[in-house]
Image 1: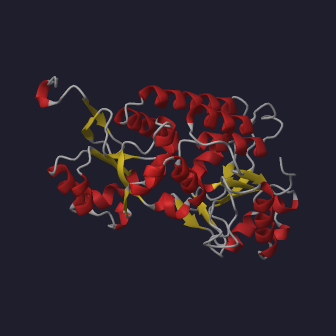
Image 2: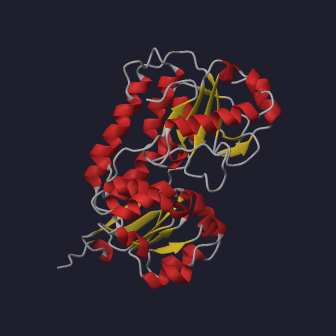
Image 3: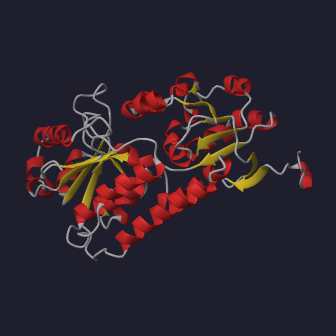
Length: 361
Protein backbone atom coordinates (compact mmCIF):
# COMPACT_ATOMS: atom_id res chain seq x y z
CA UNK A 1 0.00 0.00 0.00
CA UNK A 2 1.21 3.49 -0.84
CA UNK A 3 0.86 5.81 2.14
CA UNK A 4 0.77 9.41 0.97
CA UNK A 5 2.48 12.13 2.92
CA UNK A 6 1.68 15.87 2.71
CA UNK A 7 2.16 17.18 -0.79
CA UNK A 8 1.50 13.82 -2.40
CA UNK A 9 4.91 12.33 -1.55
CA UNK A 10 4.80 8.60 -0.88
CA UNK A 11 6.24 7.04 2.26
CA UNK A 12 9.04 5.36 0.34
CA UNK A 13 10.29 8.72 -0.93
CA UNK A 14 12.57 11.12 0.91
CA UNK A 15 13.59 14.72 0.37
CA UNK A 16 17.29 15.53 0.50
CA UNK A 17 19.50 18.54 -0.12
CA UNK A 18 22.15 17.73 -2.67
CA UNK A 19 25.63 19.24 -3.04
CA UNK A 20 24.30 21.92 -5.40
CA UNK A 21 22.04 23.09 -2.56
CA UNK A 22 18.85 21.81 -4.23
CA UNK A 23 16.02 20.06 -2.42
CA UNK A 24 15.23 16.88 -4.32
CA UNK A 25 12.64 14.20 -3.61
CA UNK A 26 13.96 10.74 -4.45
CA UNK A 27 12.91 7.12 -3.96
CA UNK A 28 14.35 5.48 -0.86
CA UNK A 29 16.08 2.39 -2.17
CA UNK A 30 15.95 3.40 -5.82
CA UNK A 31 16.08 0.44 -8.21
CA UNK A 32 16.81 2.15 -11.55
CA UNK A 33 19.62 4.66 -11.24
CA UNK A 34 22.00 6.24 -13.74
CA UNK A 35 25.43 7.26 -12.48
CA UNK A 36 26.53 10.31 -14.43
CA UNK A 37 29.99 9.81 -12.90
CA UNK A 38 31.27 6.25 -13.27
CA UNK A 39 33.71 6.45 -10.37
CA UNK A 40 30.76 6.77 -8.02
CA UNK A 41 30.89 2.98 -8.22
CA UNK A 42 33.70 3.15 -5.68
CA UNK A 43 31.19 4.51 -3.17
CA UNK A 44 28.34 2.28 -4.28
CA UNK A 45 30.57 -0.78 -3.86
CA UNK A 46 31.08 0.12 -0.20
CA UNK A 47 27.35 0.71 0.31
CA UNK A 48 26.11 -2.33 -1.65
CA UNK A 49 29.05 -4.79 -1.79
CA UNK A 50 26.85 -7.82 -2.39
CA UNK A 51 25.40 -6.36 -5.60
CA UNK A 52 26.71 -2.88 -6.47
CA UNK A 53 25.37 -2.95 -10.03
CA UNK A 54 21.88 -4.20 -9.13
CA UNK A 55 20.29 -0.73 -8.77
CA UNK A 56 21.93 0.64 -11.93
CA UNK A 57 20.61 0.87 -15.48
CA UNK A 58 23.40 3.06 -16.85
CA UNK A 59 26.61 4.86 -15.98
CA UNK A 60 29.34 7.04 -17.39
CA UNK A 61 32.03 4.99 -19.08
CA UNK A 62 35.27 6.37 -17.60
CA UNK A 63 35.79 3.51 -15.11
CA UNK A 64 35.78 1.09 -18.03
CA UNK A 65 38.17 3.29 -20.00
CA UNK A 66 40.66 4.51 -17.39
CA UNK A 67 40.52 2.14 -14.39
CA UNK A 68 40.92 -1.11 -16.30
CA UNK A 69 42.22 -3.16 -13.37
CA UNK A 70 39.23 -2.27 -11.21
CA UNK A 71 36.75 -2.71 -14.05
CA UNK A 72 38.11 -6.17 -14.87
CA UNK A 73 37.60 -7.34 -11.30
CA UNK A 74 34.08 -5.98 -10.96
CA UNK A 75 33.10 -7.28 -14.38
CA UNK A 76 34.35 -10.76 -13.49
CA UNK A 77 32.47 -10.81 -10.18
CA UNK A 78 29.32 -9.07 -11.43
CA UNK A 79 28.88 -9.99 -15.13
CA UNK A 80 25.62 -8.01 -15.37
CA UNK A 81 27.74 -4.85 -15.34
CA UNK A 82 28.51 -5.49 -19.02
CA UNK A 83 24.88 -4.88 -19.96
CA UNK A 84 24.62 -1.39 -18.46
CA UNK A 85 24.02 1.50 -20.84
CA UNK A 86 27.00 3.86 -21.02
CA UNK A 87 27.03 7.66 -21.16
CA UNK A 88 29.50 10.39 -22.00
CA UNK A 89 30.66 13.24 -19.80
CA UNK A 90 27.87 15.60 -18.80
CA UNK A 91 30.20 18.55 -18.18
CA UNK A 92 31.23 18.35 -21.85
CA UNK A 93 27.70 18.04 -23.18
CA UNK A 94 28.19 14.36 -24.03
CA UNK A 95 25.40 12.99 -21.82
CA UNK A 96 22.59 11.59 -23.99
CA UNK A 97 19.21 12.89 -22.81
CA UNK A 98 17.35 10.64 -25.21
CA UNK A 99 19.05 7.53 -23.90
CA UNK A 100 18.48 8.60 -20.30
CA UNK A 101 14.78 9.23 -20.83
CA UNK A 102 14.37 5.88 -22.59
CA UNK A 103 15.80 4.06 -19.56
CA UNK A 104 13.08 5.56 -17.31
CA UNK A 105 15.38 5.91 -14.27
CA UNK A 106 14.25 6.49 -10.68
CA UNK A 107 17.10 8.98 -10.30
CA UNK A 108 20.27 10.24 -11.97
CA UNK A 109 23.37 11.12 -9.93
CA UNK A 110 25.94 13.54 -11.30
CA UNK A 111 29.19 14.88 -9.96
CA UNK A 112 29.01 18.52 -8.89
CA UNK A 113 31.50 19.36 -11.67
CA UNK A 114 28.62 18.87 -14.13
CA UNK A 115 26.27 21.24 -12.30
CA UNK A 116 26.90 24.42 -14.29
CA UNK A 117 26.74 22.70 -17.70
CA UNK A 118 23.49 20.93 -16.85
CA UNK A 119 21.95 24.00 -15.22
CA UNK A 120 22.84 26.39 -18.03
CA UNK A 121 21.89 24.00 -20.84
CA UNK A 122 18.59 22.24 -21.51
CA UNK A 123 19.40 18.93 -19.84
CA UNK A 124 18.41 19.63 -16.23
CA UNK A 125 15.11 21.25 -17.19
CA UNK A 126 14.22 18.39 -19.54
CA UNK A 127 14.96 15.73 -16.91
CA UNK A 128 13.02 17.54 -14.20
CA UNK A 129 10.08 18.10 -16.55
CA UNK A 130 10.06 14.36 -17.15
CA UNK A 131 9.78 13.77 -13.40
CA UNK A 132 13.28 12.29 -13.05
CA UNK A 133 15.05 13.32 -9.81
CA UNK A 134 18.56 14.62 -10.46
CA UNK A 135 21.13 14.67 -7.65
CA UNK A 136 24.58 16.22 -7.41
CA UNK A 137 27.29 14.81 -5.15
CA UNK A 138 30.94 15.82 -4.86
CA UNK A 139 34.00 13.69 -4.21
CA UNK A 140 36.32 15.97 -6.18
CA UNK A 141 36.41 19.29 -4.33
CA UNK A 142 36.60 20.23 -0.65
CA UNK A 143 36.71 16.63 0.62
CA UNK A 144 36.85 17.82 4.22
CA UNK A 145 33.39 19.40 3.72
CA UNK A 146 31.73 17.52 0.86
CA UNK A 147 32.78 13.89 1.34
CA UNK A 148 30.52 13.06 4.29
CA UNK A 149 27.29 14.63 2.94
CA UNK A 150 27.88 12.96 -0.42
CA UNK A 151 28.29 9.52 1.17
CA UNK A 152 25.18 10.10 3.29
CA UNK A 153 23.14 11.22 0.29
CA UNK A 154 24.06 8.07 -1.64
CA UNK A 155 23.38 6.00 1.46
CA UNK A 156 19.84 7.37 1.55
CA UNK A 157 19.29 6.94 -2.19
CA UNK A 158 20.33 3.29 -2.05
CA UNK A 159 18.77 2.55 1.38
CA UNK A 160 22.19 1.88 2.87
CA UNK A 161 22.30 4.48 5.64
CA UNK A 162 23.89 2.17 8.21
CA UNK A 163 26.78 1.26 5.92
CA UNK A 164 27.25 4.89 4.96
CA UNK A 165 27.56 5.87 8.62
CA UNK A 166 29.93 2.96 9.32
CA UNK A 167 32.19 4.04 6.44
CA UNK A 168 32.14 7.64 7.66
CA UNK A 169 32.94 6.49 11.19
CA UNK A 170 36.03 4.67 9.91
CA UNK A 171 37.00 7.77 7.95
CA UNK A 172 36.55 10.02 10.97
CA UNK A 173 38.49 7.67 13.26
CA UNK A 174 41.35 7.41 10.76
CA UNK A 175 41.64 11.17 10.20
CA UNK A 176 41.47 11.91 13.92
CA UNK A 177 44.33 9.47 14.50
CA UNK A 178 46.48 11.53 12.16
CA UNK A 179 45.38 14.91 13.52
CA UNK A 180 46.17 13.85 17.10
CA UNK A 181 49.77 13.05 16.16
CA UNK A 182 50.66 15.92 13.82
CA UNK A 183 53.82 17.84 14.72
CA UNK A 184 54.08 21.55 14.04
CA UNK A 185 56.56 21.39 11.17
CA UNK A 186 55.11 20.79 7.71
CA UNK A 187 57.45 19.45 5.01
CA UNK A 188 57.12 21.15 1.61
CA UNK A 189 55.40 18.76 -0.82
CA UNK A 190 55.06 18.62 -4.60
CA UNK A 191 52.10 16.57 -5.87
CA UNK A 192 52.43 15.50 -9.49
CA UNK A 193 49.14 14.07 -10.71
CA UNK A 194 49.20 11.32 -13.34
CA UNK A 195 52.98 11.40 -13.44
CA UNK A 196 54.33 10.22 -16.77
CA UNK A 197 50.91 10.04 -18.37
CA UNK A 198 51.72 13.43 -19.85
CA UNK A 199 55.34 13.93 -20.88
CA UNK A 200 55.83 17.35 -19.37
CA UNK A 201 56.30 18.23 -15.70
CA UNK A 202 54.23 18.96 -13.74
CA UNK A 203 50.48 18.69 -13.48
CA UNK A 204 49.51 19.34 -9.89
CA UNK A 205 46.75 20.42 -7.49
CA UNK A 206 45.98 23.64 -5.69
CA UNK A 207 44.55 23.91 -2.19
CA UNK A 208 41.86 21.32 -2.90
CA UNK A 209 41.38 17.63 -3.64
CA UNK A 210 44.79 15.96 -3.14
CA UNK A 211 46.01 19.33 -1.90
CA UNK A 212 43.68 18.84 1.07
CA UNK A 213 45.15 15.36 1.53
CA UNK A 214 48.59 16.96 1.86
CA UNK A 215 47.25 19.45 4.40
CA UNK A 216 45.45 16.79 6.47
CA UNK A 217 48.60 14.67 6.42
CA UNK A 218 50.69 17.51 7.83
CA UNK A 219 52.38 18.75 4.67
CA UNK A 220 52.71 22.12 2.93
CA UNK A 221 51.58 21.83 -0.70
CA UNK A 222 53.92 24.12 -2.66
CA UNK A 223 51.29 24.62 -5.38
CA UNK A 224 48.51 25.68 -2.99
CA UNK A 225 48.76 29.36 -3.90
CA UNK A 226 50.17 28.82 -7.38
CA UNK A 227 47.16 26.94 -8.78
CA UNK A 228 43.85 28.79 -8.22
CA UNK A 229 41.56 25.89 -9.11
CA UNK A 230 41.63 22.18 -8.38
CA UNK A 231 44.14 21.20 -11.06
CA UNK A 232 46.77 23.10 -12.99
CA UNK A 233 50.28 22.98 -14.38
CA UNK A 234 53.52 24.07 -12.77
CA UNK A 235 56.47 25.23 -14.85
CA UNK A 236 59.49 22.88 -14.55
CA UNK A 237 61.85 25.74 -13.68
CA UNK A 238 59.52 26.91 -10.90
CA UNK A 239 59.54 23.41 -9.41
CA UNK A 240 63.35 23.37 -9.44
CA UNK A 241 63.47 26.77 -7.74
CA UNK A 242 60.99 25.67 -5.06
CA UNK A 243 63.03 22.52 -4.34
CA UNK A 244 60.34 20.46 -2.55
CA UNK A 245 61.35 18.21 0.33
CA UNK A 246 58.86 15.52 -0.69
CA UNK A 247 57.48 14.50 -4.09
CA UNK A 248 54.25 12.52 -4.40
CA UNK A 249 53.36 11.15 -7.83
CA UNK A 250 50.00 9.63 -8.63
CA UNK A 251 49.61 6.65 -10.91
CA UNK A 252 47.09 4.19 -12.26
CA UNK A 253 46.48 1.40 -14.73
CA UNK A 254 47.52 3.57 -17.66
CA UNK A 255 50.42 1.76 -19.31
CA UNK A 256 48.34 1.30 -22.47
CA UNK A 257 48.15 5.10 -22.66
CA UNK A 258 51.76 5.82 -21.74
CA UNK A 259 54.64 3.50 -20.90
CA UNK A 260 56.07 6.26 -18.69
CA UNK A 261 53.02 6.38 -16.38
CA UNK A 262 53.52 5.11 -12.84
CA UNK A 263 51.66 1.80 -12.48
CA UNK A 264 49.43 1.83 -9.42
CA UNK A 265 46.37 -0.23 -8.54
CA UNK A 266 45.19 -3.80 -8.27
CA UNK A 267 47.46 -5.09 -11.07
CA UNK A 268 50.55 -3.08 -10.09
CA UNK A 269 53.58 -4.04 -8.06
CA UNK A 270 55.84 -2.01 -5.83
CA UNK A 271 58.81 -2.89 -8.05
CA UNK A 272 57.13 -1.76 -11.28
CA UNK A 273 56.05 1.50 -9.66
CA UNK A 274 59.58 2.11 -8.38
CA UNK A 275 61.02 1.51 -11.84
CA UNK A 276 58.68 4.08 -13.39
CA UNK A 277 59.34 6.62 -10.63
CA UNK A 278 63.09 6.16 -11.01
CA UNK A 279 62.88 6.58 -14.78
CA UNK A 280 60.95 9.84 -14.40
CA UNK A 281 63.27 11.33 -11.80
CA UNK A 282 66.37 10.38 -13.80
CA UNK A 283 65.06 11.69 -17.12
CA UNK A 284 64.05 15.16 -15.94
CA UNK A 285 66.51 17.98 -16.19
CA UNK A 286 67.66 19.17 -12.78
CA UNK A 287 65.70 16.67 -10.72
CA UNK A 288 68.82 14.93 -9.46
CA UNK A 289 69.55 18.13 -7.53
CA UNK A 290 66.15 18.29 -5.80
CA UNK A 291 66.17 17.69 -2.05
CA UNK A 292 63.36 15.14 -2.31
CA UNK A 293 65.27 13.06 -4.85
CA UNK A 294 68.58 13.34 -3.03
CA UNK A 295 67.03 12.25 0.26
CA UNK A 296 64.95 9.46 -1.27
CA UNK A 297 61.64 11.08 -0.39
CA UNK A 298 59.81 10.35 -3.64
CA UNK A 299 56.54 8.46 -3.30
CA UNK A 300 53.58 7.31 -5.38
CA UNK A 301 49.89 7.03 -4.57
CA UNK A 302 47.04 5.41 -6.48
CA UNK A 303 45.41 8.22 -8.45
CA UNK A 304 41.88 7.02 -7.62
CA UNK A 305 42.27 8.20 -4.04
CA UNK A 306 41.54 11.65 -5.50
CA UNK A 307 37.84 11.00 -6.18
CA UNK A 308 36.66 8.28 -3.80
CA UNK A 309 35.63 8.03 -0.14
CA UNK A 310 38.75 5.89 0.39
CA UNK A 311 40.81 9.07 0.51
CA UNK A 312 41.35 8.85 4.27
CA UNK A 313 43.65 5.86 3.68
CA UNK A 314 45.87 8.06 1.52
CA UNK A 315 45.97 10.67 4.30
CA UNK A 316 47.32 8.07 6.75
CA UNK A 317 49.86 6.76 4.24
CA UNK A 318 51.13 10.24 3.35
CA UNK A 319 51.21 11.32 7.01
CA UNK A 320 53.46 8.38 7.84
CA UNK A 321 55.83 9.30 4.99
CA UNK A 322 55.92 12.94 6.05
CA UNK A 323 56.21 12.32 9.79
CA UNK A 324 57.56 8.79 10.31
CA UNK A 325 58.36 9.24 13.99
CA UNK A 326 55.11 10.96 14.99
CA UNK A 327 53.04 8.42 13.01
CA UNK A 328 55.11 5.37 13.94
CA UNK A 329 52.15 3.48 15.44
CA UNK A 330 49.82 4.07 12.49
CA UNK A 331 49.39 1.18 10.04
CA UNK A 332 47.94 2.36 6.71
CA UNK A 333 48.42 -1.13 5.23
CA UNK A 334 46.13 -2.56 7.92
CA UNK A 335 43.65 0.27 7.32
CA UNK A 336 43.54 -0.54 3.58
CA UNK A 337 42.91 -4.22 4.40
CA UNK A 338 40.21 -3.28 6.90
CA UNK A 339 38.43 -1.15 4.31
CA UNK A 340 38.32 -4.15 1.97
CA UNK A 341 37.41 -6.71 4.62
CA UNK A 342 34.60 -4.63 6.12
CA UNK A 343 33.21 -2.79 3.09
CA UNK A 344 34.34 -3.92 -0.35
CA UNK A 345 33.67 -6.97 -2.53
CA UNK A 346 37.29 -7.14 -3.72
CA UNK A 347 40.36 -8.61 -2.01
CA UNK A 348 43.48 -6.51 -1.44
CA UNK A 349 45.82 -6.96 -4.39
CA UNK A 350 48.55 -5.06 -6.20
CA UNK A 351 50.10 -1.83 -4.96
CA UNK A 352 48.31 1.42 -4.25
CA UNK A 353 51.43 3.19 -2.98
CA UNK A 354 55.17 2.91 -3.33
CA UNK A 355 58.31 4.60 -2.03
CA UNK A 356 61.29 5.08 -4.31
CA UNK A 357 63.84 4.66 -1.55
CA UNK A 358 62.32 1.68 0.24
CA UNK A 359 62.34 -2.07 -0.34
CA UNK A 360 59.06 -3.65 -1.42
CA UNK A 361 56.86 -4.65 1.53
